[in-house]
Length: 153
Image (cartoon, rainbow, N blue to C red; front, side):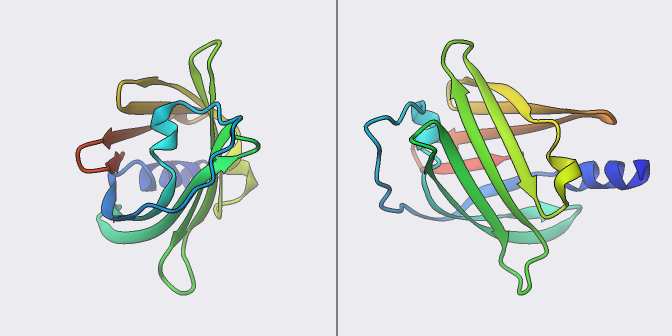
């Protein structure tokens, strides 16, 4: 079990570029959309390409406001048929504490969705950490507004 968790964590700590192809979706913004601009920049239909454990991967990803604009919901899915990986991620921002809260649920199962992640926004960078018992798992998402692209590590 412990080796399975370590293997999983090593698998998802590699660089994943979220840039190759971007097509802005028509996203209906709610008047209650409390998300900061950086979270809104995720909205749309994306193709994520990069590698995991040295093997090329490609995912589709759709991001949009959820729960009356209090979260950004990301739905990721491997383009292989059948898909090897699928995830639904909710990213929220608490303005009072200036903290990002992340709930990551994926096809690895419920035990990997606990605990939630926390982090911060600094300029065009969102970074959040999941404090697993086996060690911290960190995600860093960097937005480049000039090209409307993201890098996800």
